[in-house]
Amino acid sequence: MDEICIQKVLNGNPEEFRHLITKYKDMAYSIAMSVIKDEFLAEEIIQISFIKAFDKLHTFKGVSKFSTWFYRIVINEAFKHANKSKNEFVNFVETLPAKSPDIDNVMFKLESDDQKHFINEALKKLNSKEGLALRLFYLEENSIKEISDMTGWTDSNIKVILHRARFNLKHVLMEIYKLDRKGFY
Image 1 (cartoon, one colour):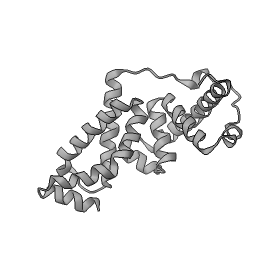
Image 2 (cartoon, rainbow, N blue to C red):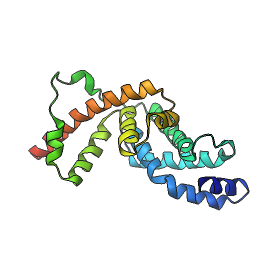
Image 3 (cartoon, rainbow, N blue to C red):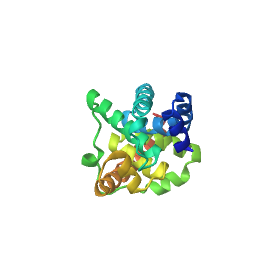
C-alpha cells in the first residue's frame, strides 16, 4: 500500500501523501515524545519530518520499509532539536541503591490504566535514548535490527541501552508509585 501511495506522489499527485501522514502520524508522535518529552515540540518535529519526507521522497529507494525510513527522519529531527536545546536529564544509574525492589509485585497490583499512566510518566523521566529504545522495542515491538535501521545505532549499543533503560525504568516506576501512594503525585 505504501509503495502505491509513494508512486502516486512521485507521479505528480501530492494529495496521496495524506494517506502516509494518516498512517504514520501517531507512531511519529510517540517517537518524538520519547526523545523531546514536550507535546508541542513533538508536534513541530512531526511536521518538519513529514515535510522533509515529502521533499526527499524521490530519494527513498525502497530498500527498507517506508516506515523505517520515515521514523529515522523523525528520530534524527528529534535528537537534532534535543541537542540544540541541551536539556539535562537525570542519570538514575549513578544514584540507585545496589539492591533493587521487585517491580513485578508493584505492577501486578496496579490496574491496567494505572500501569499505562505510570509507564508513560516513567518514560518521560528517562533520558531520550532509553525512552526511545524501550518504546520501540517493547511498546511498538520492533526488533533490534529494525531499531538499528531507524536509529543508526549498532545492535550491541541497542542492547546496552535497553539493559540500562530497564534498570532505570524499574527504579523510576518505584519512585512514581511511592509518590502516588503518599498522595503527592
